[in-house]
Length: 319
Ligand code: TXA
Ligand code: MG
Image (tube, rainbow, N blue to C red; front, side, top):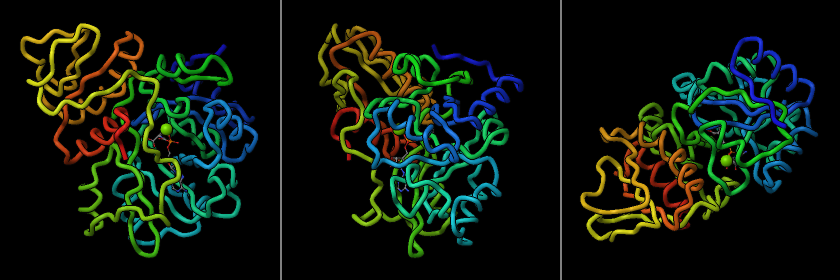
């Protein structure tokens, strides 16, 4: 049985003690829930790979609560990088830098780099502060959608987790943006909750596309299963009534059309609201049982880039 804790000070301390002793705790961040273990507990980190059925070549992100933690984990923080992190941390930005020797190869899948982020969520920050830096992937099984609520975790895991701290629905609902700094260049490894344009504005240069050498090992083509078939809608007028299927509109319900379920990502057309609802709706529709999910496109700029990336992955056409 997995024990669920409300995020009182006392409970966060209890979970932190468990982490220090080698326990596994699922916790909220501002993006999605993470499944965490202390970076100093190798066996617990191995157990996370097992629980998630995640291949060992797919490295984990280390979550920290202060810039002091960062110095323990990476070799060097170039000035340019520091400026960027100061601007966006705590927040949904993950940076990949050269790792220190003491960071276990299990966390980094044998790479000489490590992914680090400082989440903008008080519960997560306290949990780390009261324990140690925490290695955590998203709290879902491999190839499934990341959880944005506790019940999304519970439907995927029956045991093996000591505690889940319940922080309600996560604020942003899409994973962090991952960038890598190498040879004086910034590479975009994963689109995410921090819009690319905001990063480019601070560094005053464009992010590079990853080449073979700087590939992010865990960013696969077909990612999410087994949610129903996802069909991207080019023009809502072209979709026929389908009482076995669901329809996810961006801001307006399709007029005069009948579906089993109709959902709207954001009635006001707000990208942040849309992002925060996307995985939640996928989880809900997975539970309802529909044969297809029709989903409208969103404009591909700002957060819309990450939203469309996840929609394409869900449809099996992502890259
Ligand atoms: O928002 C998030 O980032 C969430 C929350 C829990 O923090 N975490 C998350 O972790 O999405 P995960 O494990 O689902 O995705 C981490 C990604 C993987 O695709 C992995 O390949 C990449 O980060 N990654 C980790 N370390 C890396 C490294 N050293 N080099 C390149 N990519 C790395
Ligand atoms: Mg994940």
